[in-house]
Structure formats: structure tokens, C-alpha cells
View 1 (cartoon, rainbow, N blue to C red):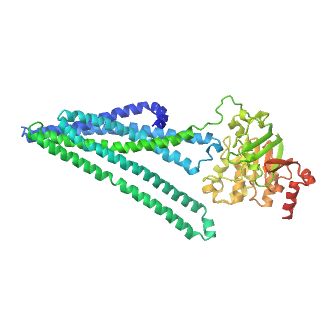
View 2: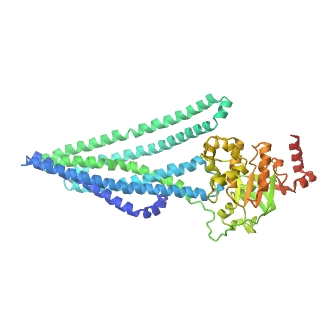
View 3: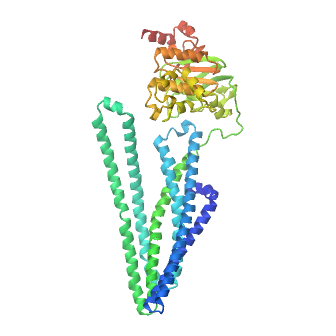
Length: 575
């Protein structure tokens, strides 16, 4: 329950809805319960052959109708307050979680899978909503109903009240035990369903590979096995859920039988009236759902507490830039590394070791080296994806750890190796990430520089062409050129191309590189590539090897050194 204390600020925010909703619950419950008194009087009138019974029935009917209407109105208001409040809290929690995802550094959430994060923002928040809405509503309803009914029952016969109440706690116990089993099976069922969904999504994305390797039958067998596991858990869940109805019917029948049996004895002794028996039976039905809901609500609270704990785990992660005193930067002057080293937590060896380099304004820099040499780690640090130690990376002669990360990232545009496109139009994918609103002409200009415009105009819908999920409708080269156009419209100071044009043909590659080098939009361009033809004309080339910079200079300087760079250049020329 302590994890649910995190919800207190939300309850304070919507206290007006909560308080009015509780008042509506209490009023609706009292009005519905009072109908038993009217029915008691009508029953007594019939049994006692009271004169003007017809008039009494009409008057009683109007009373019941009026109470039912009023109870219905307050029940409607109850749902329009407490349930609406729970929806507001659900909305706020999802926004809070999504904002937290945006603020966290990648290494803070890299231990979580995408499915797990999606489950927390969807399933876990939904379970918390069941606590802030239905659970609270039924808790209040149960308390008010039990108190009201007890007052009416005890005013008639304490012995009959005690006897009638005996089966109801048993109902709560049975419901609670079944709810625990349902909770476990529900988790298993949801997990199995998640596996089926993941497998289906994976198969759809890899359908070409599956067909190319003729693996349709093997894939189908795997899907059937996962579907069978889900079927078993779903059937087990349905069986236990089906026990609710018979249990409730059994306990209601037992309470009604006890009412008639003991009530008949008391009636024969003239200790109660005939209408009291009818009244008691109605009260039994009134108490059935509140007692049955105790177990159900308990399970809701348990699930909500577990879900809120998972949500709190993310919300309590420290957020970068919490210090308001951090400095802002608007211009770019230089980037300087001073003996920077970096170790990944899960590896004993340093990914980068004593990196020292300086990148000044109006420069074009090349970065190359074999796979695993630390280039990607270097890019992740310079773009703020990985945190570095103090006084190891300086931006405009200021330690980056003293600079607001948002400003730091605003001056950098990066085209990563792994191109991600949204399931939207070409226009929206290019415009994504622009610091300011961009016009159609600016989009077209960026596409022309990226050698994409002519290709786009061959599509029927032009820039309004949908690219499909992750850009499935585009080729590898088209995706890379679109990503470059996206970086161009950002109008930042520094452009980083992280080995992102390897899918282009030689002619397109050379045309693109020439356009980039002669444009004045960026104050610094950094090109990371394994293909030396892409970086040989840069002003300075850094060669990475085993996490260190082993060679540095112009293309000709590095060839003259006859080192690893020269060997790589000779090998590529032979190919």
C-alpha cells in the first residue's frame, strides 16, 4: 500500500471530484436501501388486509419509482465524478511517464526492454486506474451499504441479522482466494499474449527473410506452441472466473433460506411482521455484491500496488539537468576532448582511453577505424547520449556537465547508423526534429541537397507519400538520404554523419558529399565512415583503434606515415 501513497498528489488535485463522488455514492446507496422499508409496509398491508390497499400500492409504487430515479441520478453523478477522476489521473500518469522517458539518459533505461516500458505506461497505469476509480467507488459503496443495512436490520431483529450475515464473510473469503488465482493466471495469460504479439510482429517484419530461407513451417510451429500455451492459461483463467456466479448464487440462496427459516420462527412467535421477512431478503440481495466485491477490490488494490511500484521505479530515476544553475549556449565555437576515457558498466575494458582532440569552428573532420574501435561510443558521448566525467569534454571551453543538455543537443544534428523513420509521410519525417517550423520550400531544398528530391517526385503522392512502418516502403539508400535531409532542416551548428551513407552508389555519394562541403549552413561537419573515399578530403582525419586515437592528420599525412590508415586505404583500393 505504501507505493500507492505516490497517488496522494493526484487525489489532492482532484479532491473536488473525489469528495462530491463519495457524497453521491453515499446518497445513492441510502436511497436504494430505503426502498426495503417501503416494500415492508406494502407487504404488511397485504398480509393484514389493510383498507384502501390499492391506494397504498399506488403510493408505494410512486415512492419506489421516485427513490429509484433519485438513486439512478446520484449513481450517474457518482460515475461522472469518481470514474472521471480516475481517467484524469490515468491521463496525468501517462503524460508524466512519457515525459520521464524523454528526460532520462539512454543508459538509465537501457536495461528495460521496449515491451516492458510499453507495459508500464499502458497496462500498469490501467491497473492503477482501476484502483483510483472502481476500487475507491466500491469501497465507499460497501462501507455505506453495510452500515445502512445493519442499522435497518438491527432495528428489526439482532438474532436474525447475525444469522443472515454468517454466509456473507465466507463469500468474501472465497472470492478473495479465487481472485488471487485469477491474478496469477491473468499475469500468465498476459505474458503469453505478449509473446504471441512479439512473435507475430517479428515474423511480419522478417517475412522476406523467412520466405528466403523457407522457414514458414518452423515459424508456424513456434507460433502454434506459443498459442497453445496462451490457450491453456486463458482456459484456466476462464474456469476460475466462471466460479464467481455459482458461489454468489450459493451464498445468496443460503442467506435467503436462513432468513425464511429463522424469520418464519420469529413470525410464528409474533416477534416480527411478515413484511420484515421480505425486507430482510431484499437487504440480503443488497449486501451480496458489496461482500462479493471485497475480494475483487482487494485483488485490484494488490495489482495496483504492484503496478505503482513498477511505475515509481521509473519516476524515481534521477533526471539530468536537475540543476537550474547550468549554463546555456546558443553558438558553437569549439569541441575539445581532454584525456577522455569511458568504461561501460558491464565490460572490464575501456571503450575509450585517453582521447584528446580539438574540433574548431568552420572545420570538416573525418573519423575512421576498424569495428569495435570506439567510434560509436565517441559519437554517443559527443551527442550527450552517454555521460562523461567532469573536465574531459568541453564545449566552447565549458565543461559539458555544466551546460544545459537541451542547448547542447540543439546545436548538433546527427544522422545515425540505424536510421529510424516514423510511419508517416516523407514530408513529416523530414520536418521531424526541426528546431523551428519549416516551410515546404525548406523541405524541398534539404531534399535536393540530400539527393532525394528527384526520387520523391517519382512517387505518385510526392512528399505526402507514406513510408510505412520504420520506412519499409523505401530502399536503404532512400532512407539514408531522407535522414540526411531531416538533419539539414534542423538548422543546427554541427552536423554529424555516423557511417550513414554506405547504402548510396558512388555517384550519388560523391554528389552528396560535394553539396555538403560547399554549403555554409553548418559551422562544423564530422563524418564517421569506414569508406575512406568519404573522408579523404576532410581537413583532419582521426584514426581510432582499440579505443584510442592512434593516427591523426590529413589524408596525405596519414598515407605518408604508412600506418594502419594507409594499409586500410590500400586494401580498399585493391577491392
